[in-house]
Image 1: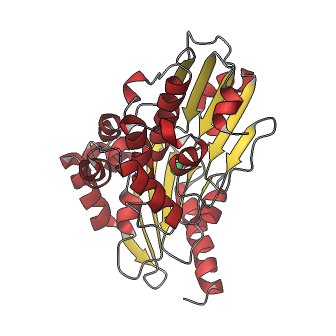
Image 2: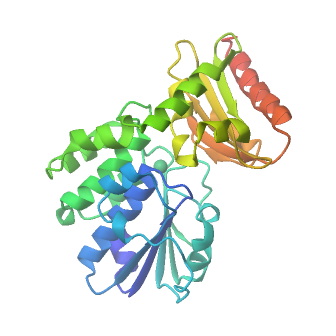
Image 3: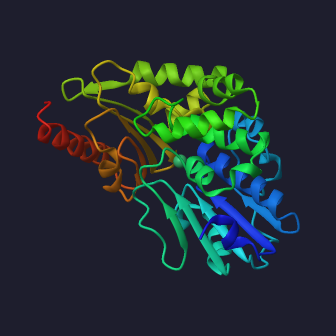
Length: 322
Ligand SMILES: [Mn+2]
């Protein structure tokens, strides 16, 4: 069954994605919402997401209708769609999903095992949740706003069509979306390359403090709360640091650690070719993709960094590159 079929008799439809929404998460949620509002004008379609970066808000049509708080919206949804995430990662909206009559999960994380009782559209090979949504909707209903929202997610999750998750199908879909006439050049500049001055300073510090290990194959950096405070860095200023570290010649794997709250650390992991960073992330209950993953660390950070490094080292040794 396709997506419109599944929700066609639903009067109230909820949509959500993972915490700290990125371009793919927000683009797929808003693109799906715009599409469902268009084909079912009598239905109420609500999107629940945490606040996102301003550049995403500016470039994702429909983001101005996002709800940040489930309080006051406890009325049961007829259908609830989770995009780019598992139910456990959507925060407070999980309760709304659990109570919905029709549950739908659309995701491209290969660590998503699929959810019992839900209609699952999960393809770990898809470039983005946005590409999955593109495949699931009726092409003749796409308009410039829907196209732009989905294009944002394809651009951000493929690193502007650079990463190995970019397939011929991705380029076909993106090319078709471009034909709706939004300013695709400014989308790419604003959602992928542009950074605030503070983000530039934070990134510069991360690059300067980075360490190279394992014969230059592993590059990492760790910011504790004190460093973050001195830099005046917020969570949104830390996106993209692991990807920038990975641009170092010879590196196959990068990890950026930071203390997100006292004693709680986030690790963002990227790799080029050999290292499967989802395995390193899963050491601490995290997950993601082969070349992009993350986890939350609640144990002593020195020991955790050592465990991550040993996992990467084991993989590089098995591959015979160190
Ligand atoms: Mn994604």
